[in-house]
Structure formats: C-alpha cells, structure tokens
Length: 498
Image (cartoon, rainbow, N blue to C red; front, side):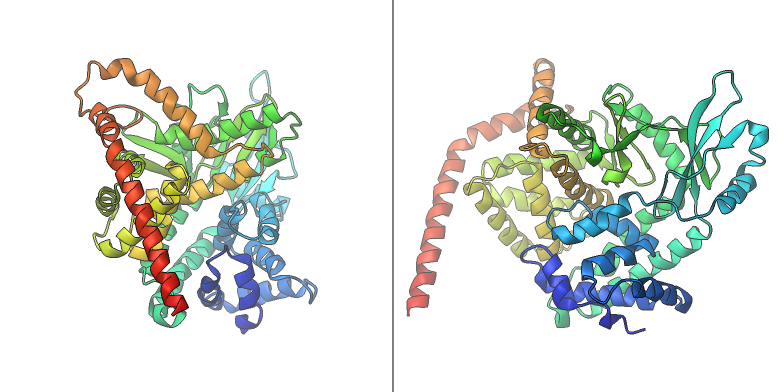
C-alpha cells in the first residue's frame, strides 16, 4: 500500500497551528514510515476500515479513524484532542478517542478474567455487561461484589488480548520514525533535534500503559498525594488485581467536559478545581518529588455525582523534582526583571545532554521577553511556551518528566477551555494559588535562612528581595530593548525603501 496517496500534505498543513505548516511534510513522512512498518495483515485491516469512508471524507476524518486502529496513534490522538493550537475539525474527530464504546466481545473478556482471577462466581462477583469504555490498551468492565452483606460496585480494567505485543511493535516503529526524520532534517527543512532520542523518551513512558501492576502502585501513591483534598476522588484499589487486571471502585459521573452545568459560577469553580488539582498542586507541592498525571485528557477526568473531580487511569505519571521547580521559579523571577542572560543560564542547566546552542537559546529568550514587553504575564504558560520554542530552535533537552509535564499542560489548557467557563484560565488559578501559598509560608520565613528555598513556592527570601531591588534595572532593560526594536525596525524599513 502506498500510504502517501491517503495522506494529503496540503490538507495536513491546514490542520497545524499557525507557523507550523512547514512540519506538514515531516509529519506525513513520519506517519507513512510508521504505517509501512506494520505487518501486512494489519495494513490491510486499516485500509479496509479507510475504505468504509466516503471518497469525500476529510483528512481529519481519516486520521480519526486511523487512530482507532493503532494503540500508539490512539494515545497520541487523546493527547491532541484538546490541544487548542490545532484546527477544530481535527480536534472534533479526535475527541471520541477519549472514551470509545467497547468492541471486544463479552466471551473474550470473561475468558481473560477467568484466567487471571479464577472462577468469578466463587469470588461472589457478577459482571455487569456491557463494558463502560474501551481505551487504547484496555477495556473497563463494571462488576458487583456480593461477598459482604452490603454489595458494592467496582470495575475491572483488563488489558485487551494481544495488546502487549501490538504496543511493543508500534513503539519500536516510533524509533524508526525518529531515525527517518534525523536523516531527512536538511531535506525537510526542520531543526536537527535528535528525533530518535525524543521518540525513545516517549516510547519508554508509553510502555507503562500495559504495566497494570505499576498503575496499581501509582493509584496508591495518588490516593496519598490527594487524600486531604475534598474536591478530588481517586478510585480505591480493590484486592482482585493481577499484572493484567486492575480492580478498583466504580466512580459514577460523566466526562468532565460533559458536566451539564448551567451556572457560570459552577463552571468556573470546576475549571478552577481542574487547574488547581492537576497543575498547581504538583507545582507548589512541599514534597521533594511531586507527582503529576501525565495523561489528563477529558476521558480520564470525571465530574462525579457529588460534584468532585475523579481522576482515572494512573498508568502514566511523572514527577517534578525540587530542582526543576526551583529552576522554573527562578526563570519566572528573571523574566519579571527581563534578565535574558540569567534565563539562558537557567535553561542551559535544565538541559540533560549539555549540548544546547546558547546563541540560538539567547535569540529564543529575547523573542519571548519581547512578548512580556507587549503585555503577556510571565507565568507558567509563558514558561512552557519558552521551553517549547527552545526545544525546537536550540536543541534544548529537558528530562522526560518535564517534557511530559509540558505536554500535559497543553492538554489541560484545552480541557479547561472546553468547560465553557468564560475567562477561566490555568494561569489565573496558578497566580491565586501562588499568593495563597506565599501568604501561608510568610510567618515561617522569619525563622528560616534568607537563602532557604524549603517552601511550597520554592523561592527564598533572598530571591524575592533581589527581584524587588532589580526592578529599577528591569525598567532600564525594558526601555533599552524598546529603543533597540525601534532602531531595528527603522533599519529594516530603510533597507526596504532602498
């Protein structure tokens, strides 16, 4: 099969964010390499599914259907479904991937459960078919446990038959895609970023999708992390678990973007809970290593009947280290004072491979500081945008967890935007949470060393004092940069006129 025929490059470019149209060809080639690497039988199956679409089907429709047949593309589609930088028509086709109706038959799932757990009847368990949902690697089946005097409801998350081998095959193909792009950088006019290494980072994380024993440990950790938060529900782990089956309590609710709320105040409260719980909580955690959910698409977030946020699917998690959060705080403080040189040094310290091009990095920093001079606030959204640009333009390589946190934030921005709460932004919640944390830790600062950063904000009293004392210098930097911009524009206009 010549997959180039199916994927139109011009149509691909129209789906990408403004300024990224030049990535249409690399994305198309990467997708073709991936599809060609699949076994012939799978390629034929995918082609047969594509043939069910009318000839007038859009590329978005074809990509949405394609993602359903490949676990890796399914997961990628879930991540991109709420990314507001992409065309709405593509996001609309990807959103169903967040929670698909089950396609695996009842007999197959019963056989798997019997093999893993033994006869369910002897355990007092009755399956409540049909399944609730089917994800990229697993099926979620409700059940009722009647062993005790008061029956309770739970769910089994069961790996689909043959999914481990299929996922491993597709993850290996990601490495081939990376190698192809590395070899074609010059001809495709894309930055030389060591794509294979990046894809291998993603591949190592996605392998956790089928490690249900790992997810069970993550559920316990998440329950401890959020146990004091009354707005959050983490499903309780039950005892009928194996390496291919996770049993947990059943959560009753709807996908968070289908909340059904009419009151603007209630919508804003829900948006604030999502932002606070999934972003602010790990950023301002007092722990040395703060966990975060690496796959927070809308299908994994439920609005429960009692008005809480239930967070599901803990296969993919990450941790922000204390040093990473300190660096994030220092970069934002340096942004407030417009100190480009300091930001370059801090970003270079985050580089895991120590090969960042500092002259290119300085150009990126200057570009993003210009945004601040035009009115953008120096918050987490600004910082993540800076990291994205530095990764693309100057070979910056942050750790795998930091990379996953960046991707999670893009997903959550889309989820919050789709809650229908006008004016609700993650940045507003983060600012409020920062002020709350700063106020709470203020008394403790009187009894701590001025250089200590052992606070939720990860800012020392010396950091704050130095920033305040640098504000006059920041004003000077602002006007110097403004005059330089005017001078450059004048020279550019003169050359154009000549």
